[in-house]
Amino acid sequence: MGFDSAAMAQSAADVRQRIARAAARSGRRAADVTLVAISKTFPAAAIRAAWEAGIRHFGENRVQEWESKRGEVAHLDATWHLVGHLQTNKARRAAGLFDSVDSVDSLDLAHRLDSALREDPHSGQRRLRVLLEIRLAPEERKSGVEPSELEALARGVLLLPRLELAGLMCIPPPAGNPEEMRPFFRRLRELRDTLRASLGVPLPALSMGMSHDFEVAIEEGATEVRLGTALFGSRS
View 1 (tube, rainbow, N blue to C red):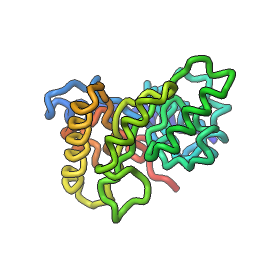
View 2 (view 1 turned 120 degrees about the vertical axis):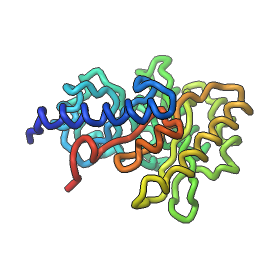
View 3 (view 1 turned 135 degrees about the vertical axis):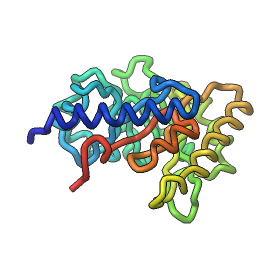
View 4 (view 1 turned 45 degrees about the vertical axis):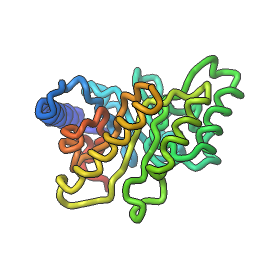
């Protein structure tokens, strides 16, 4: 299955302009914001087209789906993120397949990722980058750690030698108006700032904002935005 490279190049250029304008409104540079292309349900050809358009970070929701595409695109010089909920029984596979797991929400899962790398003779001294997923609207989501339990989880992850704790991630409840997302994004930034001060570690990454609300997320401090529809078009 082919993918329209010219359309992808235009979509990528449009998104980059929007990122740059939102970053400027928050007193930052476009280079301060990483675009993670969410390629779930799209074929490997779409990933290649996005890579040719200059995108270097890609996110998948499911281990199995990434395994089905990986053979066609793993040779590309890119960073591969797992952004969907990871079941503990798939942690071992995920640790070997992704450069970053952006949805760690329990110490059990973190321990399994760490153990998988320590027990893999081919992993060398590789450390897996992780983000902690925060549940900011408990009635809406089953995954994510409660804010009240965040510091304990972060302290536990910092003790695991093969994990690199980079920051936080959230998926707010859906809303029609992007402005309704602003309080959630602001809350995640405040949680990160409090945690950073408490732990004395940098935690540079704030992964928040998707195709319909990423500009608001950037205004509130996002360093990574996860865009699928805005780049690839509507999912079937």
